[in-house]
Picture 1 (cartoon, protein in one colour):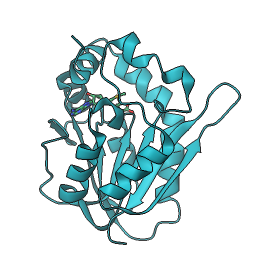
Picture 2: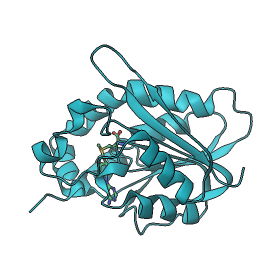
Picture 3: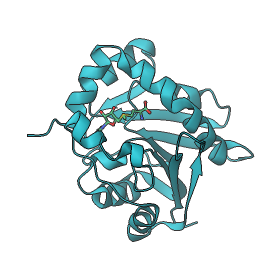
Picture 4: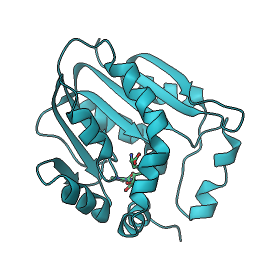
Length: 205
Ligand SMILES: C[S@@+](CC[C@H](N)C(=O)[O-])C[C@H]1O[C@@H](n2cnc3c(N)ncnc32)[C@H](O)[C@@H]1O
């Protein structure tokens, strides 16, 4: 029997491992955020899908063009940590597959989350239909993908379900969900790392 991803990450958050994860993800996240925020002129709302302890929400909230950033995560201790650090922030404890925001947002972001779902297609469609404003952008970062062999054992190592797909499969998922201008690129490629795969798409641009 596999562990639920949200149970695993809740136990990590209780042990303080959320901070190490934020530190490990931040070089890639900084580049992903630059891609959508540098040169941007219009203001925006922002939702982080699978926000962990909410570090990206707090970072984006400090951008002058950000009207409101909020985060959603299904791991209770992750959300408790987020609220403890930032009591005034908006952090929702919920399953991404069922949660819907009161107001749709221009930017939906997610780092290292979509492959924990058995059907990332269903999650993507749910987000496109219920979270995104017309003209908005969905952008996600993934380290577990076909093309990064170091990640192939993670599901077995952690005894958690992970869906292993390649770059083209992920683009297809975005297109099938109704997104346009779908593209992929990698950040932080080096001799030792195949890079974080980034998938991006726009709704009714
Ligand atoms: C690898 S962590 C990444 C956290 C954060 N994005 C970061 O970069 O620090 C994956 C996160 O996805 C969340 N998650 C996984 N499945 C989920 C689900 N079905 N609903 C809500 N959150 C989920 C986990 O609880 C965990 O916090």
